[in-house]
Length: 427
Image (cartoon, rainbow, N blue to C red; front, side, top):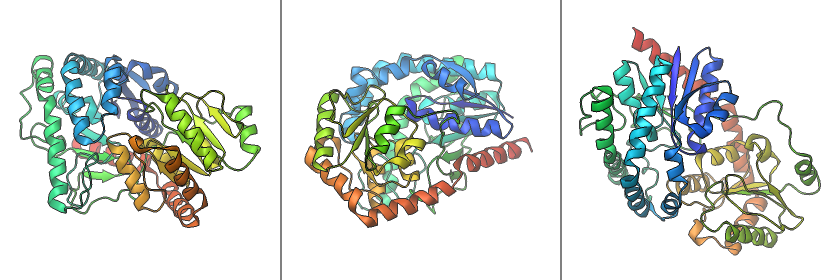
């Protein structure tokens, strides 16, 4: 089978889809991943075909305006900022859709798997008359009365409020109708998408198969979901067999107690030096050794004490098992990697799904109560680090959860659903 994977966004929006693509390739399928051109070397290095998409979308997200949107604080502040960004991004989205269509035509797929940010997934599938699979790193679009939608405050108001939160998300998704309909009509020659259609439906109302790339032990599948919605387990992309850690990292790990990992990825905001100073002070107050991750232009680290190691990058699946705890912003991928390693977690969230994962980790007893970045101080971070590194119950909970996650095979589960859909479509 020839499979076209369409995604857009930052590394966290690409890496799980590359992991899935590798699994599909190992199962005997031909896979093309279409996303921003800056990820082409990453995709081809893993043996997958690349479909071209320009870099304009990811450059917008990484711009000053994009960073301000990320730091807007709260769901509604974020929505306001993103709507402002949308007015500037209409041309970018139109170009992204056109690139997606050109790449799909070149790949000639039998099935498409797409991230909701890519916008054109269902329309391209409709035009090519092939099945489509919506793939989500976070549970955001399938309504349920059991959980509030990611990004919304859990006000404990019951099922009606939880379902309402998904309706708001659905309404927000319709903000892109004009761009999508222009693409459908002018590029694909299709009718407009009906306003009554939700993000989990094709234009004719047929329900989409929806894959959620998270663990059921972290966020269980709701009983009121349709049969078309699946929780597969995480899609991990493990480090290459030939990768070797640098000598100075090994020497640091062997020179004392297991350190605490601290990394906020590209989310360190507009003042990374302030964040770095705060983190260093917190580690010293907690009397803990630390590894300070600086990748993706995030934390700025210089003149660190001997007890703190500056790390440009290292595969999380190799690094995290060597840690005593992990401190990060709560991105879905980093949260998954820390939990799989069985390490207690401190999440310091900025936006959208990050506070949600922080609350889930806390509710599962595998970490401290999350500390929002706007409330982060050296004192409360030090207290959280001390708690997760000394509390035996938290450490045991984290290890038990890690064992369950390590026994899942999310990629194999997702592959089975995709192959079953393809068989049903061909009958």
